[in-house]
Image (cartoon, rainbow, N blue to C red; front, top):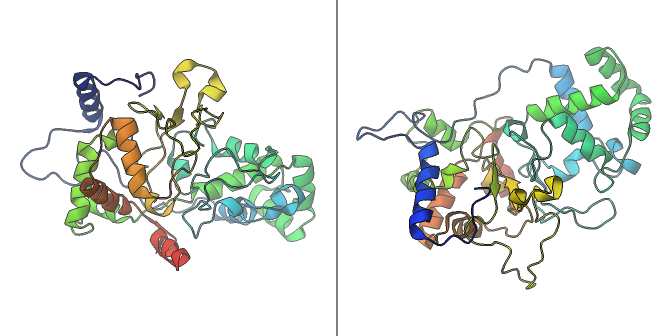
Amino acid sequence: MPGTDPHCRNPAIRAGLLLGLAALVHHPVTAERLAPTEGEPIAPIEPPAAIADEARVALGERLFHDPRLSHGDRVACASCHDLDQGGDDGRVRSPSANGESQAFNTPTVFNAALSFRLNWRGNFRTLEEHNEAVLLDEALMSTSWAEVLPKLRTDAELSQDFVAAYREAPSRETVLDALAAYQRSLVTPGAPFDRYLGGDDDAITPQEKEGYRLFKDYGCAACHQGVNAGGNLFQKFGVFEDPFANRSAGSTTLSEADAGRFALTGRNRDRQVFRVPSLRNVAVTAPYFHDGRTASLEEAVEIMGRSQLGREIGSHDVKLIVEFLGTLTGEYRGRSLADGAAGSAR
């Protein structure tokens, strides 16, 4: 947890910390199996209700795929957030506008609206402010409203649709609203685990159920809980073991990205503190961590065991936990995201 000594090796203190974390998410379990949603740390994603304003969502979808939102019409939001590939781009770090690598691994856009903050450092509270920052950031879309709006307004059909949806031509406010409306629609219900939580005991296998039990017993659910299986709190990366100490290059120097929220706040308690990522669709959103350090979900679980729990998780248990994590892959527009991942692997 933020503020916890990462070098704490006292078994009693460590056990107390883990028990305390587990107490936040566990309820007493009776001998009789509880209904799936009772006492569970993860809640199901409910199928979205009818879209209130389909015209605005449709506009947002067009804008999301429109490279005119970037300087020189080079990239669209969808360039880094491929909805056929898990909602990210599958790269360690995307190239920036100047050709250099971005500081952070690209998070998935799926279920982003379910998180309490956005981005690895949690520096945005709303989709609208995040979208504007991306559009104007010189390393990302590198544009300006003075460049974007005339391009959109000269598109007669698009302008007509904006007038129909907003009663005005494209503007800063309406563009940001449309993008956010579309992004809020990018939720992925229908995961096997959600069906299990809903009462379908056969939705996941015995091995996956055992992986879920281990996920809770090891303490993973202390941070990865709620409807988004994460995304709702900040946590220090390296509670028990420094995850930056054994880099392949041999360097222990932390970059500004590695510094986490400290780079924003300047407070020592925020060093290496990040927004806990959602585990929704984690099996199809490699590579992992803020720096994309591994494409192996098994290795990611091992790293988390050492750095966050102070434990070596055996290979058998890692395999079972990974099997459980695969049950968190949901559906978009009636199609499992696992289908897209399988297609890209062929």
